Each structure stands twice: as structure tokens, then as C-alpha cells.
Length: 215
Image (cartoon, rainbow, N blue to C red; front, side, top):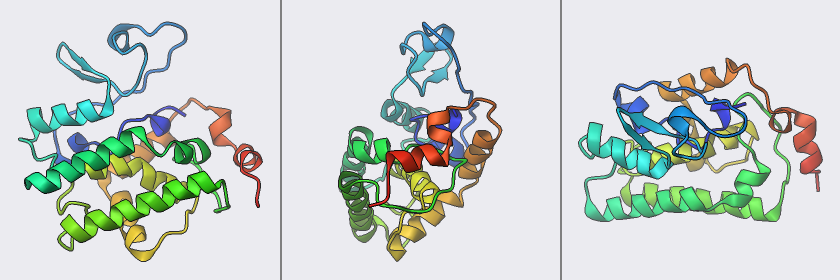
């Protein structure tokens, strides 16, 4: 599984806001080559002419400035600062969630206790969503009123919550549903279903159950 496990926040602002783009999934062995050499094989990589950018937050910043007129962030300075902080935390934190609930857009598992640390990550994410919706959401589906980079960064989390049937309070469940209803998310799921590559450690229900036995 490749496109279904990339660290790129999807749907990216390019897909949601209509900027022209084309996605492709690199599969290689050994040393990274071509467009992916500069990033040492790390994905995602944005290719725009001669430019290569291989960090997801840097990619979103560039797309917002270059193609969206800055609309990737909230216009209000305080909301924008909080949105950036939320993205930075998502970018670097929640490692237990990533470890125990690996990305799998093709899977659908029943919820079970995985670890106290992962469940603490889940609780913190739900609290972040609630705080953003309350302070900046303006009664709209997105964290800061209109769709921003922050929503793009939490789209993979929403996908994990759906894959593993994570129990959510109503507000968080509505937010996950809003993300999943995006056409860009449909395209992401379709790309995952159409992949011909398989990583068994992320595909098999039995593997996940063995790693996370019921308590």
C-alpha cells in the first residue's frame, strides 16, 4: 500500500481548491532516483517545474502562497497562528496513534483497545478539534471556518478513525464525516483501492489484531 499510506496531508489544498496538480506514487528499491533523489526517497514530494519540496507542511505553505493567494490559512492573524500551531503539532506529534493505528484506506476493522498512549493521542486530537471549532469554526464544518491546511493535515487522522471504527463524540464524528465527504477524499480512497502494491504488515486484519490484542 503506497498512496494509501503516504504522509502527505490528503486531501491537499490543491485538490480541494482546484489548483492543477497530478499525483503519482513512487515505488523503488535501493537509492532514490530522479525527482525523489533530493528528498532521499522521502515522500511526499512536490514537483513544480524545477522545484522539489519534500516536507508536507512546506508543501502546503508553498501551494497556499503560489496557487491559492494565501487562502490555505485563515485570514485572521490569531486564527492563523493557532492553525499553524495545530499543523505543527500534527506534523510532529501523535506518534502512538501512527504506530498503533497504521494508515490503511482499504481496511475496515472493529474498534478495540490498542494502548493507553494511543488513546491519549485520540483524546487530545478530539480536544484540539473541539477547541478550534469552538473558537474559530463559525458554526461551519471546518476547524477555522473555511477549509484550510489544518483540515488537510487532519484528513489522514479522520481516515484512521474510520478504518479502525474509533468511537467519537458527535462533534468529532461530524467533522470526520465532513472530511470523508470531500470529492478529494473519494479520489484518495479510489487511488488506494486501485494500487497494485501490498504491504502485508498493514493489510491483514490478523496482523493488526496480533499487534493490539484485546484487553
